[in-house]
Image 1: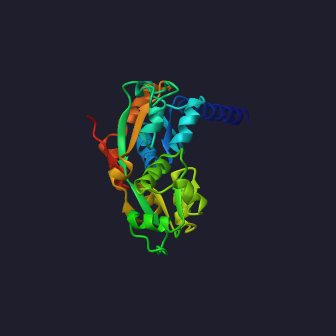
Image 2 (image 1 turned 120 degrees about the horizontal axis):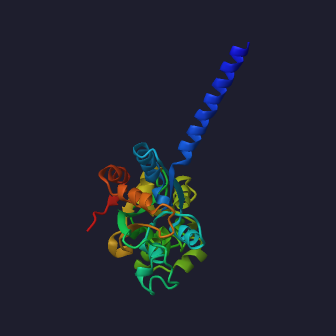
Image 3 (image 1 turned 180 degrees about the horizontal axis):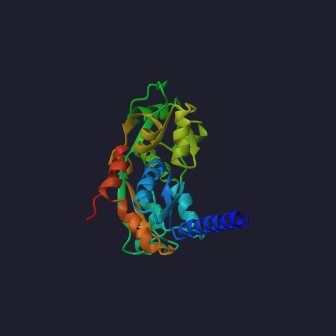
Length: 275
């Protein structure tokens, strides 16, 4: 009986030591907190699996939302190691090197030397299944908006996809306030909300990114040319508030590798080569 009890105690101690060791191993992992534009949700989730498999000592934690919301959270003190915006504007507002015109509050959050233009996307005009309104192009959409004969979803003014859409409206000399008052527009707080509205056919069309259209299996009827809204550039940078700047830089470097680029390209992103 004493022998059995001794063996049981020994086994209990071994299990306890094993659990402690496993806990210690988990505690030793380095966490990288990445704030990224909502349009990157699917690709970065896939990349997380690839990166953590190759780097078992690292845990990647994401916060996906509109770039404007993420910028505000960073400004207000949220923990973040890497920021990836869907437009230069929000990154510039955190980058002291962007100058007073682009960064009027003189915010200084970007780790100098780490910033790069990571990806390019396209602004797309998408329609619900079956395309009930028969919309075929931005040119046609402009005429339908002028006639008050269409209901379109777009991003809010503080969201990059909304800002790109505002430029398209200006290109066609359309007044956004008048269109909203006429009941032609509805809004989403990020690109995923706009995508959902189109997917659920609660609107006749929407303006989102080509990558979100791919992920949601929505029909793209047209894409905006650069002279309509400019290039859709996604800048990325390590932040100078990072608790793990070396690990953050290593992850950011990985996003430009061939393995990561293949994930981005599969949904329609165009990786931008370093100068």
